[in-house]
Length: 551
Image (cartoon, rainbow, N blue to C red; front, side):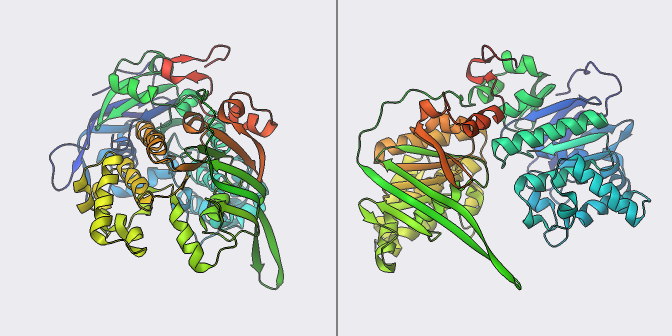
C-alpha cells in the first residue's frame, strides 16, 4: 500500500511500494508494498505488533538487512532524489551518519563495551569529517553537553557499563546526530526505560529535531509515546500498511479494526475499584536492607545502599505492585525475596517460615514456595532444550517422578492457553508472548505460594501484554498465588495491581490501595512519575483526550 502524497514539499525520505522477501524459502513477502514520506522537522511513528515489518522497513532504509536472509524485491527508497536500494555499499556507508542515522532499542548492544564513550562518538567524525584530534574532542564534548549529560569530561572517559541506561541512550543519540543528518530512525529507543528517563529521551529527540530540522522515523509499540510525539502515524500489520493518517485522526477515529484493537489495548492510568482482600499473608518482609560493597584497587571499598528499611505484606490472591524509576531498588527487593541476593538485614517470612534464617537445606525446600518470572522471555528459556524438559526440571529436582511432572506440565499448558503439543517444541518456535506464557507455567510447576514477576510484560506488544495480564489475573484467582509485580509502567500497575508500593533511592516513599496511590498520589515523587507517563492526556480505550487536558 502506497500512502497518498503527504501535504509537505520536498520530503527527506520517500518509501514507495517497498517489498522485502526471504532469500530462501517462503515466497510470501516480509514487507509488502509499504509506502510513506517524511518531511523535514516531521515525526512519523510506525506502529504495529512484533512481526509487522516495522524494523525490517527501517533496516531496508539504512541498508542493514542481513544479505543472507532478506532482500528488497521491489519498490524504491528515495533519500532526496537518490534511490537507496540501488546505492553501492560504499555509498550507503557514506550516507549513514552524514545524511541518515539510527538509534537502536538496546544501547548496551549498540556500544562497544571495551572502548571509552568519547572514542566511540569520535569515530563518526574520524570516518566522515576532516577534523583533527583536538577539534574532534571539542566537538564531542560539546555534543555530550547538548544532550544534557552531566560532567561531559567524565562521560567522555567512561566505559558504557559505567553509565545508566538513560545515559547510554543519550550517548547513542550523540553518535547518531553529531553530523546533523537529514533523517533519524529511532527503533524502540525507550522500551526498556522507566517513565521519567523515557520522557527525558523523548524530549531530547524533539529538541535535537527542532535544532537541526531533522525528519524522524520513530518505531514503537507504545501508543502513549505516539500520543506525545507523533505528527503522523503509519500502522503496519503482517508486513503491510493498513492505515496512515495524522495523529489526531488515528487516535480519535481509527478506521481499521487492527488500529482500533491496538489503541484500545492500552491500559488506563485510572485503576479499577477493587474489593479489599481479607486473606492470610503468604509473604512478609520487615526492615529489609541490602548494601553492596564495591572493591576498588588500592582504594577503600565503596558502599551502595540499594535497599533501605523496606517492609511489605503480600496476601494470598493479592497482586502487589512495586513501582519506581530504574535504580530505585525494585529488582533488588525481588532478588532478595527469592534468595538470589543475600539481604544485609531484615526478615523475610514465607508462609510462616523465615527464609533469611533458614539453613541451606531448609532454604532449598522453602524456595518451592516462591518462584520468579523474569523480564526477557527470550533469555529465560534454554534454546537447546525442549519446553517439556524445561518445565519438569524443577519438580524432578525435588523428587517428583518424570511421568507425573510431565502430566502436570500438560495441565499448566492448558491453563496458560497453549496446547500440550507445545511441550515437544523448542523456544524459538514460539512468539514472545507465548514464551512468557510458558515461563509463567514453568514458575507454577512447583505450586508456589508467591510468584515474583519482574517487569514480566515490559518487552511485549500492548495486545500481547494485555493477554499476559489477563492470564496472571486468572491464575491468581484459580491457584490462590500471591503475586509481587515489579514494574515501571504505571498503566500496567493500574490495570492489574490491588495495592502499590512506590520506591525511590531504595526506600518506600508511598504505599496503599492502588485506587488511592494511583488516582490520588500524595508524594511529590509519585506525582512526578505520573507527569512523566507517556500519553497521560489520552483515554485510549474511549478514543478521546481526557477532559481538562490538551492532547
